[in-house]
Every structure is written in C-alpha cells, then in structure tokens.
Length: 204
Image (cartoon, rainbow, N blue to C red; front, side, top):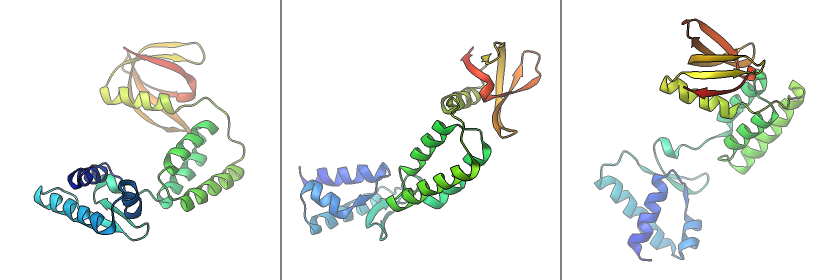
C-alpha cells in the first residue's frame, strides 16, 4: 500500500466522523511518526483545495484528529445525563427500553463517563423504584414517527380488542407520563391513544 492509499483511507475515516489516534494509525499501517505527519498535512491540503466545509482539528484530551462539523461532534456524559433523568421521570419506558437507550447513548462515551453514567442509572433506578418489565415501545415509536413523516393513514389494533379502521397519525407526545399518539379518525376527530394500549398497526 502506497502513501496515496493511506492518505485516502485516513481522509475517508475522518469524513465518516471517526477520530484518528496517531499511535493506533501508525501501528495499523506500520508507518513512522514523520510519515503520519505528512499524511495529516496532505489531508489539510485536500480540504483547502476542495473548499471543504471542514477543518482538521486536534483534540489534546484524547490525542486524536477529527474534522469539524456535525459528524465529528463528540458525545459527552453531560449531554446524556439529562436524557437519562427524563427517561426515569417519564415512566413511559420499561426496563428493556431504558437499558437499550442507555447502551446506545453510552457507546460513544469515554470509559470514565460510561462508568459514571452506569452508576447514575443504578442510583436513579433505586430512587424511582422498580421499573416495569413492559413490552418494548421503541420499534413502534420509530415506525409511528415514519408514518407521521409520510402523512400515511394506518389501521390500529388495540390491546382491548378494538380496531380503528382508518386513522391519520398527527403527532407523538407525553400524556400523564406515558407516550401517546394523536391521530385523526375518519370523522376528522382527534383521538389520543397511549402506546401501551396499541398492540400493533398496519399502514393503509
């Protein structure tokens, strides 16, 4: 593999939002410090010549290079903690959903922040009492958001056995601590359905 290939690999990883640590890259491609520095300068030149809306930056805290912009923003524990508080306070999600959300959010944190967040979650769990082992709502929540974006009508199948033959989902929100769907029925009347009351739905 020649220099051009390594520069392109480095550039591609940066564009995908990866943080490049000098020592790890040097070990992976068996190159020296001076070679790596030349690759970095080549990437800076590419960004300049193509008028790219990014700047190659260095983070001294974790000794990594990254591109400025939306993709390179690093998630911090202080950004995740308020979300965790809302999850426990809302009582809308069961244990499996909270665990899944927490794992997804903490995956991009540093090991120290991940450990702190895990301890905070355990403490909040004790403070708020037992979390119900209710069925997961995440997939339904996501699918309902998609049909709202598409302005697509659906048929609702409720937990009490009733069916709503045609409803136009309008918005998702909180009602009495639970996530609820607001939808217009055939008579153009706005109705509200708790997600826990919906078994499933089908697009029309």
